[in-house]
Image 1 (cartoon, protein in one colour):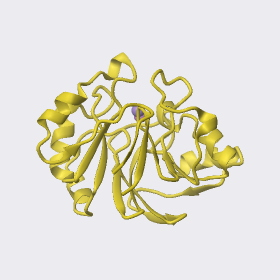
Image 2 (image 1 turned 90 degrees about the horizontal axis):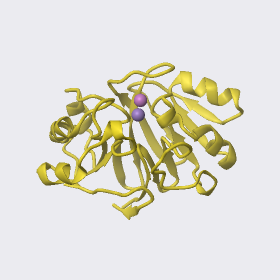
Image 3 (image 1 turned 60 degrees about the horizontal axis):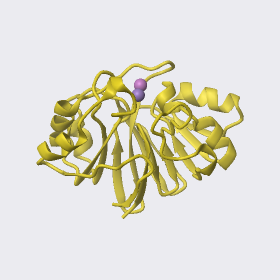
Image 4 (image 1 turned 90 degrees about the vertical axis):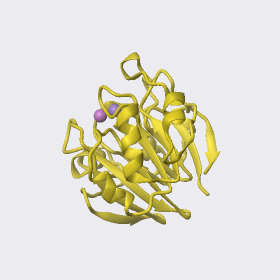
Length: 212
Ligand code: NI
Ligand code: MN
């Protein structure tokens, strides 16, 4: 079991690992920047709704930021401790095994990624911003317990494609993300839950925390 707190949009605090903290400027942020404590901070890509407050939080917590070389360059320039990695690689940081996987998306620097995070007895896939891609099947072969998938459409998969992603990933639990933050990414998470037969869908409200 891991304690997962949804911070809104694509942000999650998983025990002591924070991913994509977009708080400032997020109309549905589920936390305050100054309240967030983490020892590891993963950033999927350099878009502002993912890099967000990451550098500030990493500095305040002396946490280790994990991202692509291009994002890490920016972090190091600000004095943040950081580990660079790239697609297909896996590193160990503070008891977490962190694997960077493909995401089909653009970004302001380098490339966009997803993560497979293994620790505390759970394997979690955070898709980042991504379109549906058939190699999600390979990620599923690693044995995913919990998948965090975008459902908002326009910039990422929508509900229909996220349902196809669940079939390839075959996780035990799916947490929808990247929807209803802005009008452009409106989606019906209840509809996603009703139609998802391949996994249990857990809908978290921004700020809500669950042991999963
Ligand atoms: Ni993006
Ligand atoms: Mn995004």
